[in-house]
Length: 219
Image 1 (cartoon, rainbow, N blue to C red):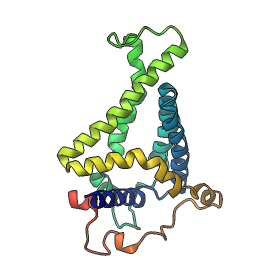
Image 2 (cartoon, rainbow, N blue to C red):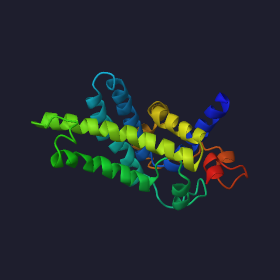
Image 3 (cartoon, rainbow, N blue to C red):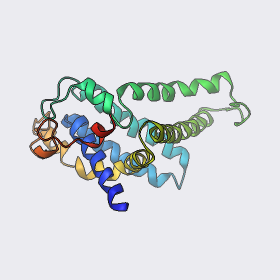
Image 4 (cartoon, helix red, strand yellow):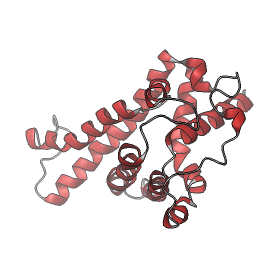
């Protein structure tokens, strides 16, 4: 059972890398995101407010900027798949879901202008520092809620194991990305804008063998 769980985790990580991380800029931004997320993980036990601010303002923005602005959205010749197909079978948050999540995050501070107490949960903020600390608390809830929502959602549209594996992947991505993309900034400085994909094992590439990936199995 544990062996199968770890195998599914490996497959989700592999599919995420080969489908959505072709750009060296995107990979480099994920390296930055991983470093700042690890800082946020440590600070979660020291000051959760600081952790939330770093996690959203640095980690998430750098991470998602890589996907939205630098990752190719055209036909994927390495995996022989269209962008639309990859978005359709995405286990986690595809670009459309990310737009919704990031919009909720960006607009959430407005709630404190409408109701400074947030339905009685907060003492009305009296300074910019108070305001930012209360916003950070809201962002903590949005982050945890976004993770739990998609996990439970996967329970119903896929299965419980897929949801739990995805949640494990998301929580451990900073550690994995740090190792996986540590050489991306150097490659970028050498002028390599796209990962040539030479490391991709042909037997895992769409169209080369008949064995479906995890995402194809549940599509």
